[in-house]
Picture 1: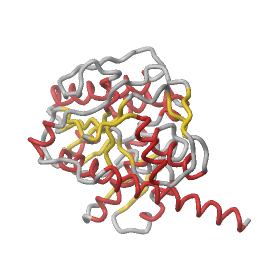
Picture 2: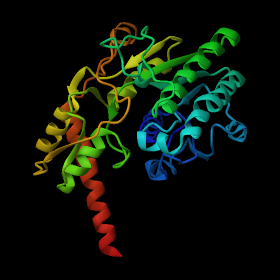
Picture 3: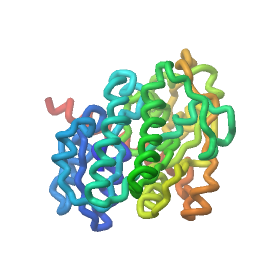
Picture 4: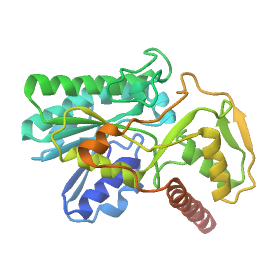
Length: 318
């Protein structure tokens, strides 16, 4: 799988290994972390391949043969894709083309991890898979949005021209352990600030909504689509639509923090509302989220608290 050292990818590698599936994990660590997969290196069936999927040499290094190609590589946080705009576009174009080539070579199924960002700042709510989106193609977020939209077009064309067995999952706001503290996304940012007793910085007036889905639930949906032969895009995300302000309030409460909430400038093209229509994934795959928001946030807070404690312990040993 590509992007296997990232937040989602590392959880997916671990889930597959636990099920007895051998995994080649390709990642150039531009936004992923070797720490996310360090505990997997000694496990039977796991191989880490340090390479950039946009480079043809990476495709040659992934010798296979493979049954499934999970294409999860791509800078996904604003901090990353704004720092690496051209690399982000390359992953969606060259990287996707290279992985489709591997799938064709091995007769494997390819699953593209796309995103709710293909809907942009949606004018339809909730967002169904047949909604074309409202994306600014030249805005600051466009490198990520358009990279994923192009990836979807490329996968669809490959299916039509070559009969490739390929599918697409559009992932909504997933959260959980192994997110990076300063990646620019709301949940890790708020948790880090609350644990440090710092003000939580809510963009705009905080009335914009997001629909959270815990990582375990997202992966359950991903794997159901991965083992199918579905070729149409499938939304995977939570039904717990709430405002960003309310997410901050929940985190302050669960961390028992004395932090206040401050309001800061809202990013350009920040979506106003975000909630998936999950009718398709429920009816076709019998999937729905199981982890309640409070339980998911408690697990995520515990992870960040443990990371903070470990960092303090390490600093004390210097």
